[in-house]
Image (cartoon, rainbow, N blue to C red; front, side, top):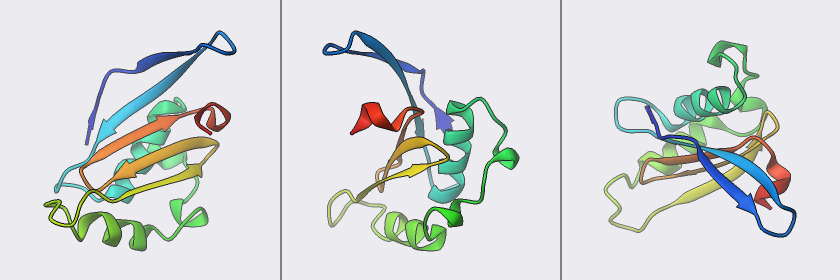
Length: 106
């Protein structure tokens, strides 16, 4: 998994800054593993300190959904959810975005 630089965005309505962490997963790891690592990074924690992803969703189903069409023949599939207090977006193209404050991502 690779991490992009943290993107700083500004909410024009509230004048608040938010940090969104971008990451990418590839064929060398599973999407579920990459999500745990990305959220841990966004929250300043180690992956082993994170709660099990399967407490939030079916990690095997997530992996199956996102890896089934990795070549994009049927379009890009994306999933969003909240995990360990962070908003997560992950897609079959390998993109992961994490916002530690899910209220800003709604």
